[in-house]
Length: 242
Image (cartoon, rainbow, N blue to C red; front, side, top):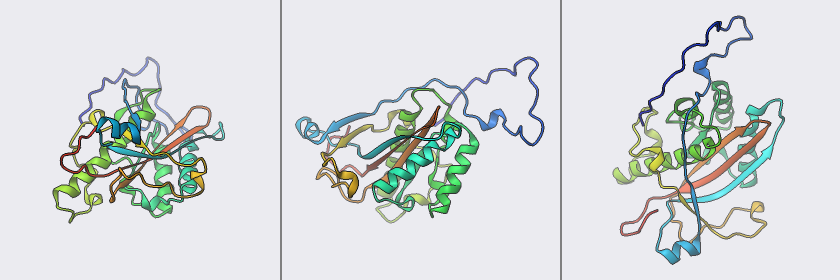
């Protein structure tokens, strides 16, 4: 997805970083940007009532407070807590979208995922926050919509090859088949008991097998970490998609 950005000029009197403790540059920081995203959550009964087939399924979400002295670790702490609660592992994830406000955050997250055996190419395959910028207040929803676009793109690749190819063989330079802002963003939320975190969430009968699982996460100022697990599957012919 092409992005056009205007880079502000260097402030008068600004000096280049010097010394071993001054390694941060503008290239390592997510630039300021404008943006918006919409994610519509619908119940299973609402989907039946309106004849809609959800484009994605909300599996679980989690937000927690972390050490405000190290706020960039919040996304990883939320992600690991969510995976543990849902009895999932990083190796089960088909795509991960981290809003990396700083390059060092993405590198640390990548290293941690590799330690858990996940293919590193599944993290921010379309560039993440460093590529698209940081529209403060919307970055979390944008990361989720970007994740849904990537998961649907992977499913499209498998569908076009008759199920004989794995989507994770695509490279990071693949061009998305749709812009992130137009990705299907209506998700069905099946009813589950209050104690669902003690076991795997039951699958809605609307949700077909062969789903692809994704994780979106973001760290906020002050030590807040948030993460969400979603899944997508191919839409059968004749079904209305939203």
